[in-house]
Length: 152
Image (cartoon, rainbow, N blue to C red):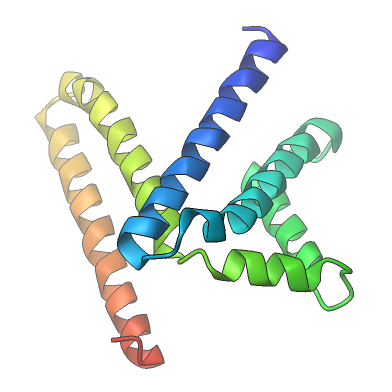
């Protein structure tokens, strides 16, 4: 697949993700789409820069590492755009993008269930136990942290 086509696919996914985050933030947390837009743009720009880093920097780090470092750099106290970045991203509730990631992960796993079934019944059981365990552990950690912070 050509590099240009791959870039178009990534761009489409970023726009789709931005729309999903805006809708999740609006529906779940009553934050207006226009109010969410600057924060979503900051996140998408960081993602694009992270992708560029994976292509330009010879280190074989995952894109998450680059995006995390870039996010820390633009939000650090010496950054001239710190206030804009923090105030823009602060209106996006953390669970809005996480809900979108969970939906994408569910679609991805559902797409692979046929592969798991071909591996035999033991693989299906392992997959179900793993997914259930991941969900329960995430729920327990979320409950503990939200309880400790007084959010619930």
